[in-house]
Amino acid sequence: MAIAPARSRRPAVAGYFYPEAPQALAGLVDRFCASQATAEPATAVVVPHGSYVHAGAVAGEVFGRVHVPRRCLVIGPSHTGTWMPWSLMSTGAYRTPLGEVPVDEALAEALRARCPFLEPDAWAQRGEHAVEVVVPFLQRRGPADLRIVPVIVGAPAPDDVGRFGEALAQVIRLVEEPVLLVLSSDLAHYEPLATVETQDRALLEAIEGLDAQRLLSAVQAHGVNMCGDLVVAAGLRAARALGARAGRCVAHATSAAGGGDPDSATGYGGVVCS
Image 1 (cartoon, rainbow, N blue to C red):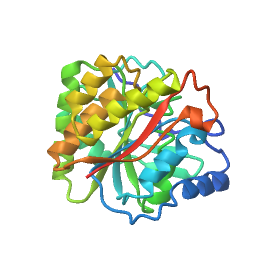
Image 2: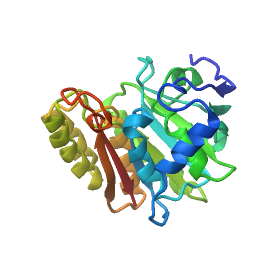
Image 3: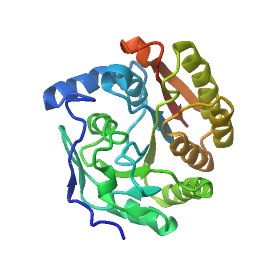
């Protein structure tokens, strides 16, 4: 049985992955999002969840180019070893140093109705950064009445990935206003820089083609340690079902560029799907 959800999910990595002081955080996010491109609607986006030092500019390049609507589904992989394959916050609010964002309870309930395997458990979000680092971008770029549904993916059965993607599309299609799918994922991990760049190219080509099976095949064929492959695969299925035609990589970076070890690098990609 799922544990009763907490009323408000508190930040776990403020002061570590991103600034804890509200003014500093707001200013940094605004600088990251200072794109000269006109913000346009998108069906889904793929953004990294690394620290802002390494990955913030990539996420900002994405969010600086898209219109963030009132309702967003934010999906990320588990880093905490939660036993649940699928979980979401269905009530309460998600807190960052910039304030609280209410959970979209109606959207969460609609998703649960189509995914009986999706457990309503806010405790799976404790200590988890994959969604947390994305929320300040939504707070700065979205409207004052922003609502989110945070979903954490553990180690699901393969068939459930496709079922979840279909459910996402069904739920979003029935909503009478835009809903943005935010897919939190880092690319290749802990490889020499040249290997990361090669592996990332294969991953990004599949993502730009909205090809979930090609993405998963690339992960397997190249032995890629990708954090969030199933998250992105489900999101790509949903985006294609919702009518998206292609993804466009608007930014790519590695941890080595941010001062990390080039012999053990991680890749970060930002993709807009529309």
